[in-house]
Length: 78
Image 1: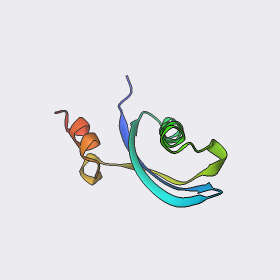
Image 2: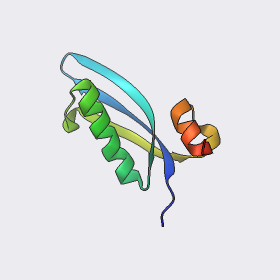
Image 3: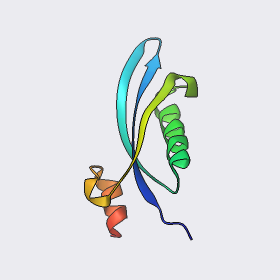
Image 4: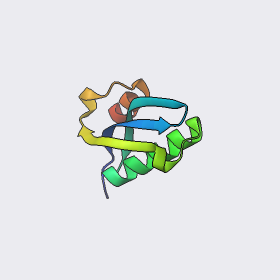
């Protein structure tokens, strides 16, 4: 069985009236799954389309590097 990894994804949102950069941490099995999760979360919360989201970097990180407290607790197994 595959082990769940933690990925840090950085990118930009480029909507007509709103531009911003983002950095999010997600748990996924593969980098492709992590990017898909980012598309779903940002599309849901900010009403952005996939073509408005540009992923710049997908990096696997260790549990010690995590800054999100929820993901940190999940990685620790609490």
